[in-house]
Length: 149
Image (cartoon, helix red, strand yellow):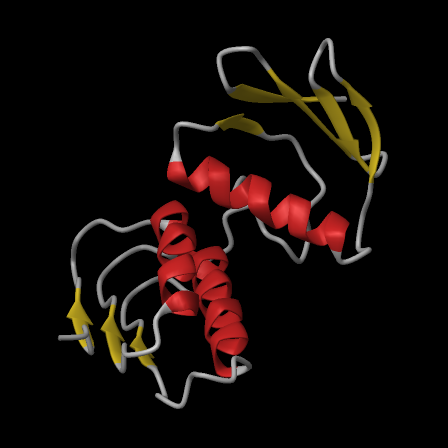
């Protein structure tokens, strides 16, 4: 059976977890209701979820309408330290063992593939990659990424 209803209210879900959840929202064809009430996802988490809903609605095989409840989720609060694909410039330290960091990297790479940015330099020895002039990411041999200026 397919999951149609998820209530994860009051589970201390923040913007990072909301961004990870957004991938599942986008890929789900059966989910009709997601209740996030009482989780501090903030504006960044809410935007990530809304982008996922928009992408989901654009898929051919998806006819199910999704309702997301975000009561008392602080959706009007902006966390300037949070990753926001609408404003991707900033400093990032990404650990590829962390689901949120992977989502940030995937968003940055997606922007580059869509022509909204480009990797200007990739150094195989240092594993450096620069996206525009404002974002530079270093991947260490252990799989941890650090932003550089």
